[in-house]
Structure formats: structure tokens, C-alpha cells
Image (cartoon, rainbow, N blue to C red; front, side):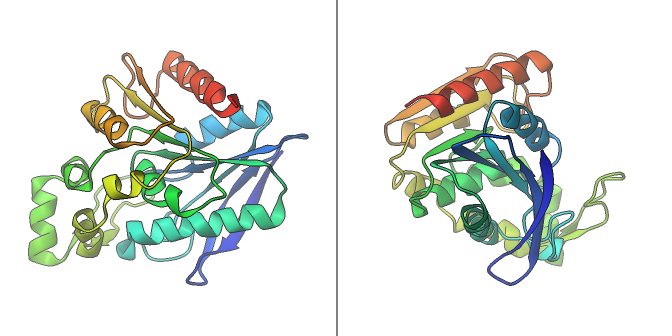
Length: 253
């Protein structure tokens, strides 16, 4: 069963998402979307299958993203990590489960890496198509022209017809956090099982980032490079390989 949800973040704004609820479960999975993505696409594909495998699944959209309240122009990664806590609080208050798995994709993997060590409720974490350092990531998310616009105008404007963020502005404060938030420092404080997954043909984030993440992380940890897969694991054979390995990691005691 899939049901829409709505809950408050720490600023009192409504965040919206979906719960995928099987008849029986003892493990919950929260999927954290990327930037400037949404809870649809990769998140929906993964959790639709996972709920059929017996996991309680949650996907939601961050503050200022698509269906959730807040302005896109005011987005911050620091707010997104606060949103993760609000999501877990909501899930814990409304459902009973024994284990909690945090899955982040792309910028969602950044958010997960920054947050996971802060919350003892998280049993395991999975980072998909992530980066090891935000100073690297700034060059993956923004072109040189966009960086120049941040400095000259104080914002950029997205021109992506058909996308939910078409014609929306993003203030420089989002860019600035790439130089203040610290993934290695956060990850070194995390001691629960960690799975790092990356496509060898990722066109957005080089696969070397996965190897660097693995080098930084504490044990127990595992890395999986899916041969030929792109940033979103769009081909069906890559999706199946991804899902199978995520399932094995989650179920392993």
C-alpha cells in the first residue's frame, strides 16, 4: 500500500512524501533524493520494489523542493539534514520498526553522509553515486558560468523546460555551503555498517569519488562498483544489480 504523508520540519513548514507499507515488516528504509531532484524517479523505483520485499519505505521532498513547502531559492544542505531528522521523527512516531536504513542518492548521499553519525536510530547507511568532498562536488553540480553568476548576481536561475524547477532561482548561500560542510569529518564519526555504490560510467560524479569515500569511512564498510551503470542506474540490468545488492546488505546481520 502506498499512502501520501505530510509532516512538519523544524521550521514549521510542511514536507510531503509517500509511505510504501507492506503487510508485515520490521525494517524501515528512508530514501533521500538528490539535487535538484525529487522523490520521484530513482526513489520511487527503488522503494516500490523494496516494499514488495517486506520493507517499510519512506520517500519525501526536502524543504523548497517540488511538492514540499519553502522556497527553492532558499535551499541549504544544512536544512536538508534537519529535514532528515524530521522525517525520522515522523516515521518513528507513526510506525513501529526494529531497524532503520538511510539511503541517499547523489546530493542525497551527501546529506546522508553528513547526518548519519548524529542519529543513533540509524542502523545502516547506503550512499549511491555520492562524493567524498564538497569542494569537489561544487564542480559537478555547477558550471563555471553558474559559479560566475553566483558571484556577480548572488543567484542562478535554472532553465530546464518541463522540470519542476524551471525558471526558479537559487541563492548563493547554497553554493557557499560546499565550502563549510565537511563530509570526511562527518563520515569518520559514523561506525555502523556502510555500503557505497557507484556506476563505473557515472557521467555526473566520477567513480573515483566512491573509492575515496570508502577510504575515508570506518569499518564495517563495503563498496560496489556496477560496471557500465550511469549516475541514476537507468538501465534495467543495472537496477536489478543495484536492488539485489542493496537487499543483501540490508538483510545481512
